Image 1: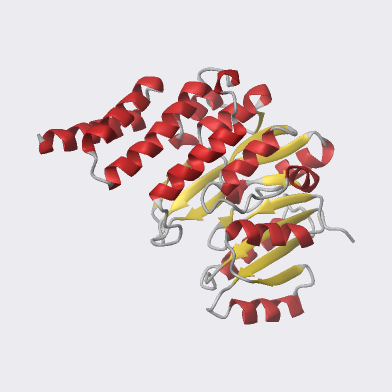
Image 2: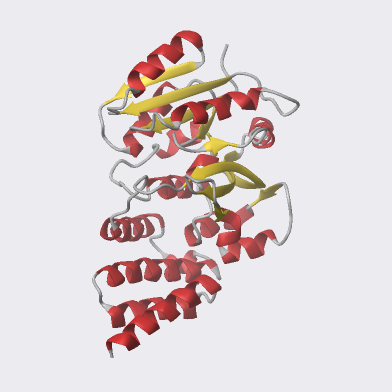
Length: 314
C-alpha cells in the first residue's frame, strides 16, 4: 500500500543523532494526531561512522524504512536520490540531527491531501544547542514575516506574495518543509550546482507552481552544533546572488516592501564577506545601506557593530 507521506533524510556521519530523528518520525503515527504509516528514506551520503550497518539492521525490523547508500556528492544529490525512490505523493524533509515535535505533521498533510493546488507547506522551527539551550525560533527572528503573522495561529495562506516573502526572508526551514512530489518533479528537484542555498532555490521554484502555506506551530527542533553546517562565506554570497539572478530576472516585478528587503539581504551577505576580509568601511557601507532599505533591529545591530569596528581603525 502506498504510504501517505515519505520523509527524506540525508545523513553523513550523524549516527549519534539519527536514531532520535527516526524515532521522532515514527512518533507521528501515534495518538490522536497520528497520521498512520510513514515511509522513511534515509540516504547515507558516504558515512564512515557505521550508519550503513545501523540502517541495514533497522530495515530488517521496519518495512517502511528504506536505506540508500549513496556516493558522497553533497546534500542536494542525496535528497534527490531519496526523492527518486520515495513512494508517497507528499514529501517531508528532515535532517539527520533534527527532530519533529509530536503531532506536528497532521494539519499540513491533511491540507495538502484535500487541496492539490498546494505545492509547499512549512512550519516554525526551534534552534537548540547540543546542551539543550533554546536559541530562538525562525518565525520570530525574521521581522517582516513576524509582522505579517501578526499574532495569528494555525495554517496561513501566503497568497500571491508567497514568492516575494520567501525571497526576502529565509523563513522556510528545510526540516519543516512538506511538499508535493509531483511539484518537486515538475521543477527538477534540488539544483546540484549549489552547495549552499539549494533548499531556498527549490522553495522559490515551488512558489511558482502552486500555493504556499505556513503553519505557526513549531514543528521541528533544529540542532545547531559546531561544525554541523560550516559555511564558506564567499560560496554563500555567490550562491545567493546567482539564485537571485536566476529566480528574479526582473527585480522591478517583486512587490514592495519585499523587493527592498531582498536587496537588503543581498547587501547583508556582501557585508559578511567584507568583514571576513577585514574591509571595514566597505562592510559598514553595505550593512548601512541594507538598514536603510529595510530598517529592523537585526540590521541596526549589525550596522552599529560595523561602525564601531571602523571607528576603532580610525
